[in-house]
Length: 257
Image (cartoon, rainbow, N blue to C red):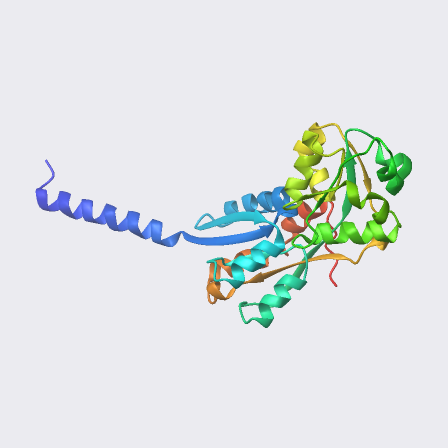
């Protein structure tokens, strides 16, 4: 039999070992624009495999709403915006702990189960059978803001503005289009290319980028994560070859500015 004293020492060793393992796993909280959902989840899966001691958790929403939460002291470590403006505003507020990095440029697409947008392109929105057009809320979602720019560029905005229905973010906008709450949607190409959207059987048309200001997307380490090595690792990982390959797969351009 093992002496009681030895058993006690073994037990203490196991407890300290378990405590050390838990302590070694550092949690980082990431907030990101909704257009990134599938791409960033995929990137995070690869990141976790390479960094098993980092518990990186991601929450998605409209960039404008996430900006408001961060400005009001929400405890987040990294912010992946759908534009460069919100991160720049946070820098002006002295709420950042890194340079703002442009990690991708997004694209807009018209998607529908009801019609083939490729046939008439932007003019498909004028079809009398199209009664509801989903876009993200332009006041809080950069993809919604750019959708409005495109509609105005092609001089169809005034003709369709009464048909517009607004999603809280680009994911909800896509849901409106897939569930039939809207006949057609102007959404992120990154969502169109996801397996779930492809299963829906809709057709899509990529809106020419000349019709709106560039959808440059920026990320930044937030003040709360000052000196957090795990946050820095994730921030750097978004520029890795593996992360760039995933972003490109989902339709993003990753050319530097």
